Length: 332
Image 1 (cartoon, helix red, strand yellow):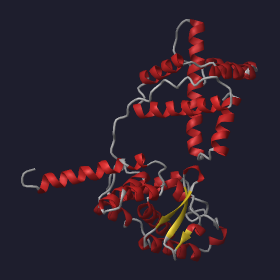
Image 2 (tube, helix red, strand yellow; image 1 turned 120 degrees about the vertical axis):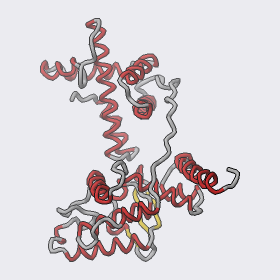
Image 3 (cartoon, one colour; image 1 turned 135 degrees about the vertical axis):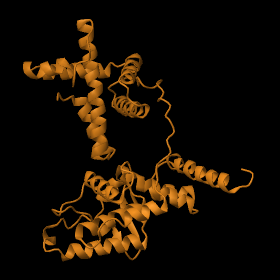
Image 4 (cartoon, helix red, strand yellow; image 1 turned 90 degrees about the horizontal axis):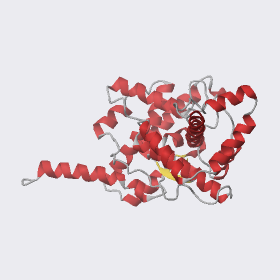
């Protein structure tokens, strides 16, 4: 892939100054590559008079590899990015719409461009932001999926706690439900982050912001059982001695591995396969609110920067209360 220094500078800014996670930076990079591919294809269409957008970074970028003109093409793309205007952005959004992207996906790609051009404006690469007058498409309100008490209890009891990996998986599920932490925060936990006496976890969230999350005794017991089995394993001296949750080779677990493990237990329990690790976070927040926690406390527990992000859960609990009212009130 042809490297665009301006985009590389932006991605380094996200990683080293804004402390975005590698996954988030990767998504931004993919969105910007797609945008550059569209711009290159648009130029190709203008030159030829018609024709579909070539794949990848578009035909001229593929040709650049073989002709040795990658630097010239990279410089040309930088100029196209810097010279962007609002009408070109609108054409790109229309192009995404024709490709049947969902409103949420288009909104995310638009957010990437907003961040990129804000960066360019701060660094003096552009005189004005071409997205200043463009509104984000109105999103369809989707209530977060969550599990009922019977469902969550079934899931938590599914892993075989008598084996090392089963004990690890039970501890992971218990921690996610007990604390509501993100799966990225779960795999980033270190052994020293667990405070059994204070019944809390030190969690490193988005933007490297740390918070202390309370954790219940059931989850702590599951962690201790897992650690006992881990220490008893003859291979334990070769395990990562920092990471709390490790794979069968003793290395820190990845978020993808957690998803695979959850899929396995959902299948064993005969539960909805679309349930994700994030569903456990939604379940934690919903159960907290249903049992009397105030919204501000749940916001802090989830590590949300804005309370508006947490407010989506009030729609869930309101819906449940309305259903209970309709079922119980004589004149409902």
